[in-house]
Length: 360
Image (cartoon, rainbow, N blue to C red; front, top):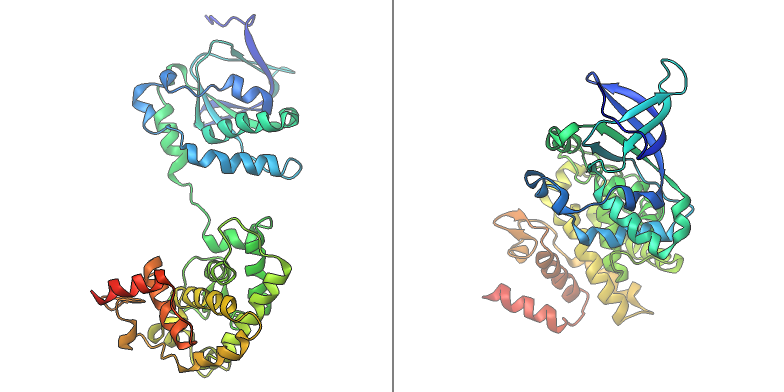
């Protein structure tokens, strides 16, 4: 016999479904109710679950900013919760899967997926209370005593795969530096037709040269942009001009486009077939444009003097570590130092300090 008391409960219009023979319920809840209903308090979480559910507070400000900056154009996926007590579902009609879900007010509700979204909603409502009338889907599982919640947490996260940086760059229409990278891939040599748009790495036999994410990173360095800074139209046009100029001064890139050199052979033998070379060019280009804002184009042809072959001893302990390419930021900077010197630029104090380390 059920001990459910419907006098003191939350009530939601909901849809009932079944997985593995167990019922679950999908309801939409106003954002303003989320912080009140789903209180995240580690003292209330069973000890064996706490280690998996500690909030990473550094993630919250970014999510809050996303909500507050895009009140008319944001997307939040469902929050998944376990209800640690009996619930009641009243179908609108006999046998209907549409009805009202009733959850006791004193029920322990544990968030299996979405605790960072819950906290971000709480903080965003302080800045923009109007968001409170929006809704978010909530997926309710009944787990009396929260006996299965730990396994549910593992199951929900087992097959979650973060999209590659290139795919995120391709799809993120709000990030202006991503927009700049997409424009470069479509309009600037050496990227046109040779950009891997989805994957974060390039296979040995791929006909592509650079990933979209490496173009984005190198161009950020070229323009001196921080991670979140937007590239203006003027800066994007400057980047197009720069990479086109470098292409004109890089015989191997031209050979690729003329089909005189295969991408596979190029990757095997040359540093500037990889992201580290592109990134180093971005750093060197930033220093060049800063030093010669009106005449930098005249100096770019000096890059023809660079011997980019991996076997060139000059790259040892720079882009090459133990005969392998190194993508570490220090190695990118040391590679850029060679390019700066080739372009006739003076090294900065920080560049000189790095050079001293390589000499030790």
